[in-house]
Amino acid sequence: MKSSELFEEAKTMMPGGVSSPVRAIRPYPFYTAGGHGPFIKTVDGCELIDCCLGYGPLILGHAHETVRRAIEEQVTEGWLYGTPCPQELDLARRVIDDHPSIDMVRFVSSGSEATMAAIRLARAATGRQDVIKIEGGFHGAHDAVLVKAGSGATTMGVPDSAGIVADLVKHTRQVAYNDLEALESVLSSSEDIAALIIEPVMGNVGPVLPEEGYLQEVRRLTEEHDVLLIFDEVITGYRLGIGGAQKYFGVTPDLTTLGKIIGGGLPVGAFGGRKDLMEQVAPQGPVYQAGTFSGNPLTMAAGAAALTWLHDHPETYRTLDEGTRAIGDTCEDAHAGGSFVRIGSIFKYFFRPEAPRNYAEAKESDTARFATFWEKMLAHGVFLPPSQFETEFISAAHTDEIIEHIADHYSTCLSE
Ligand SMILES: Cc1ncc(COP(=O)(O)O)c(C=O)c1O
Ligand SMILES: N[C@H](C=O)CCC(=O)O
Image (tube, rainbow, N blue to C red):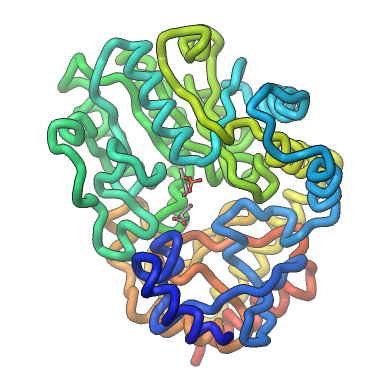
């Protein structure tokens, strides 16, 4: 069956025909038959260079041999036990060793679960109710954070989801990214703030970078006001380097949430932090958190294999950084009136003259121009996430030649 036919049938069975809203490309999404290295193949017989990479987890590319072998070896021994397994320790050791903020970690099955539990833990540990989030930040699809949420929620025009109890959401305060005055003002306005949750580099309105010293001041202010700092590193974890944004910028939060890359491409999430905080999680403490699939051996084995590969190939991060730099240089030369933003293997072209500093500015981008550009790129064989408000990625499988292709297509499609 062709993609268009599959989608017609899917719409009769699944809301919008998809399992996650960001996939509902108009008039219909392509259906994927396979992924290898930097490519995905559609059921319609096209091979595309993939710069979406499963929305970030696939830093080694599709079906990477090391991860595939780890999965195959584990599969022969079973893939779900409902009991502890040694593979959890392999991944826990890595995550703890690599992150200055993490003394103890709990594995879950998604980034959403991780942020939900981290917020619950912060509320329990401080005895306070309010949480500050950044406007346009996306921390998954749960009630406390679906307020001015980025990603698909902004793309589809539902940043404040329906169905959320007003009494709950009134405890979610909002401040603009890169605005220290606004943060200080909210922190000073109440004694009931448990935590600030922040993507250190915003990744769900396209990438928005922290201004010089911003994250350091965020740390100082939260400490001064005795408010816990949660770094949501679901995207930046192992993406900006080993140790994520906290090592990259030298800022240590109280709690960290992870996902995506740490599962090697299988469903995963994790939250971790200081021992005194993590000891409050059940069964050691009173903060309940649980999951049938948490710490399953397949994900743990895939994740440990991916992280080991990254440790064994430290040059990868430099190569990835050079890759997005090369794409950016070509974009500058195209003089298309927009702005190219990049950090490490994360990048995006915003259809707005200046790089955005926050959600409000990112939303000023010309989304109609982005849509036209996106279609052209697809026609040239490059798959980008289908929204101005999603981040693009490259992987270790994106060779110099592939990067050159991406850069050339970017240049052509921006100039046309
Ligand atoms: C920064 C951030 N936090 C949390 C999440 C939620 O993760 P998941 O989709 O695995 O639930 C995402 C992505 O969806 C994310 O980008
Ligand atoms: N922006 C989201 C993750 O980072 C996209 C994933 C999804 O919602 O399916």
